Image 1 (tube, rainbow, N blue to C red):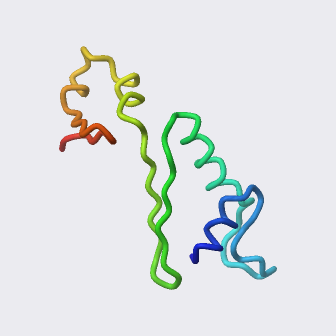
Image 2 (image 1 turned 180 degrees about the horizontal axis):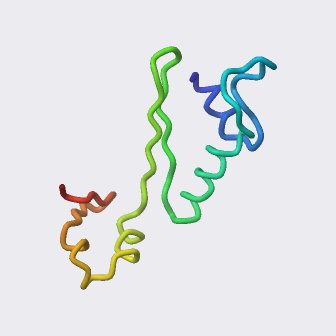
Length: 91
């Protein structure tokens, strides 16, 4: 997707492929809803795309939001790494 197409895809009920014979079904709500949910959680949705190459969508939650999900006494919380800007689960 181009930068203009990304902006279009983030609008509710909009799709990049407007042809009647498009390959994929859908309502055009997936990316807008995901972006809104991320913002409600204090995070952000990042989209990196190059036409005819591919697209990577990254969801970034604030570290504090992840800590709220896993109580400190949970084993999983000891497996989290926090660099101040994002939190990763150690493998």
